[in-house]
Image (cartoon, rainbow, N blue to C red; front, top):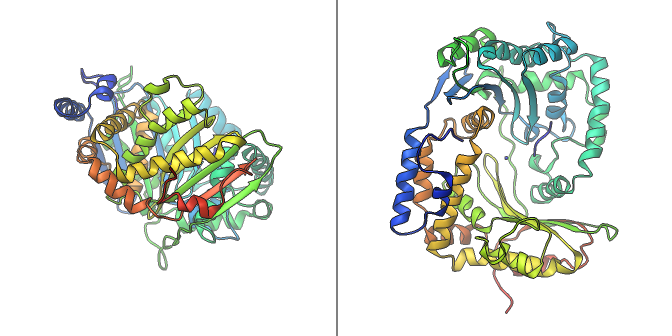
Length: 482
């Protein structure tokens, strides 16, 4: 399945307490609680093989394990001619190897009671399996087989070509994905990040076995792959072991090439452009709109403050309760003023750039007001956000981080992604400390740097006649109407 981007808690302090602790003495308690949580986090062990492949694991004390391959290769490494190859290759991974037919692979996974899946993003391709810990060796062997020995048969390619074309039709009905593809297309126009993950229809109709093989031989190298695993002790005598995982990695992945014959492919440069795409369709009942400014990459020091700012804006849906008691000011206004059906703040990071913004779903008559109040809240982040608001957002962010890491699969995903993004797994206590170091002045400074007086990227689909013109929206990035 194509996707468009942490803990087993053993402390007496619950998530609700972490959420409600705020400023002053209670902020100190929140920090102490976070430190207590950090003490209970199992170590993430990392080993690098001779060919550069990294092996990372965590014994999370769970009853299952998840193991997967995180590969530093996605649609960003494609060009106009082969755009869609990485996603096509993901589909072909489960269609048979020299050792297993597609039926054999499916039966083996089912008989293990396991799940095998994959996804492609703009910068990464991931293959992973969730199984009993006693079946970890078999899961690793299957993953090694499908990325090194896939037959990529012509008949299977033709059959999967039709599957992908149907998937593209389904994606076109998901308006959120459509809007975000448009947002990337206008924000990163004429660059690799501006292209879709699935690729254009004409490419899908012409991609062949040679394109798939070339992509594998170009990008599936040891230094660009992380074998990540998370799990725990099971009802059997088998126990999750990092040393055993290293042995499995050496045996199954030791022959992966670690060097390039020439120069390694460079990360394609992508430049942000303030611009817009509007697709007006008055037959649609609701308008779907995204507005974003250029943010930063994963490892930039301003990433954490932007995450807190993202949490301050928050998200809201009509199905939520709360009204005036909602923590997000924009959610309060949306609820009381009936400004939209839903909105969602986002902070999408890539290696060297990112998009920070808001996605909204509105009725035609409320678009103008919703856009105004959104920008008003953005300006508030730059000028008047309070310490109490920031403290609440920090606690909410930390709580969400803890709640996200619930189960072997999200832990494994966190390990694999962080190893590719940071070349290490950031310890939870370090992340907590970096969040705690942020105050209202930090938020004001960082948001002024990236939001105030910046030209945004805008993508809008639907009955958008009432959407202000681009110059008016841009003026709202430094001026508020009274």
